[in-house]
Image (tube, rainbow, N blue to C red; front, side):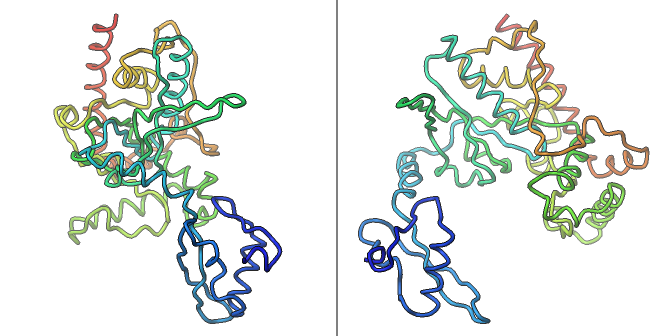
Amino acid sequence: MFEKEHGFTLCRGKKKNPKIAKYVTKLSVEGKIKNPWQPLLKDRGEIQYYERKVNGSFVQLPYFIPNKVLPTRQLIVEERMNTTSLGNFFIHLPKTGGVGTKNMMGRDAKQMLREKTITEPYIVCDEGMTSIENWKTFKTSFKRVIRENKILKANCVMSMSESYYHPVFADNIFTVLRNPHEHVLSMYFHCTESRSHKLKSHKMPSLDGWLESWVSQKEQLSQTNTRVEWLPNKFSCYNPINMQSRLLGYPRTKDDLKDRFRFVGVLSELDTSTCIMAQHLSGATPSRCNCNDRRRRLVADHGVVHHGSTYNTTNSQRELIDILTDMDQILYKEAMTLFEEEVQLFEKEHG
């Protein structure tokens, strides 16, 4: 009815037509149509409303959500109704090479499938910043068109998100840690140079100013009995105070890491870390894991010019970073010790 009366086809689903949206909004504000999507409701979706300020006053405007984009998550929840936890989960700590880890494991899966080392395709499914508490809505498979009329369906052998450690929702938890000095610098340059923070980069001071500001706030924690998470973030970006320890629940020793995680990799040894994770997930080892394969693999740079691993800091900057990462440095040292043990065990078992 609406389409017939107004002479155009409504754009539904994920794609939006700004001209249509503007026209529908105009009609709604002027009161010419009470509910523009009412004719579409019958077995097709639902209407939700949002407030928008128009001519100095707020009005309720409708937003149509079609059924065709809803069932996927609903079916996943129903499928997992009788399960008590997620199988494999990767905690993507910001600026520790999480995207590079996912991409490398995806390439390994394709290569092993071609070499017939594995029989079924799999993929690491990125859930963005969704909390692990919502694990029942995580994707279980991923479809991709690889040739004309041919679709590859890969099972999500592991889910990944920028979440925190929680022992209840996953059977096997993986993560990758980074040298704390490099990590803090990477956070700073992401906040000042990356594409995703371009509109907020003006809030960032110089590196010295940024470090000094966070050190000042860290020193006030003991005086005010405030949690790190509650500190004001005037820079609208990362909080560098022991971020890795904080998101992983403050493990302090090698035994803590062994109790909490199936495997802990390190960014400086990402090739080896992903080899071991691939073995844990698929029972097979990628061919590039042979020590004779020396090809260099890059992680995602997010449009950043400077990088934490190559930037030369001053003595005062290093001292400030030491203060901000006192617990992370202990954690990283323990993780490196555990990693070396895991590598030796892996080489012994798999030749």
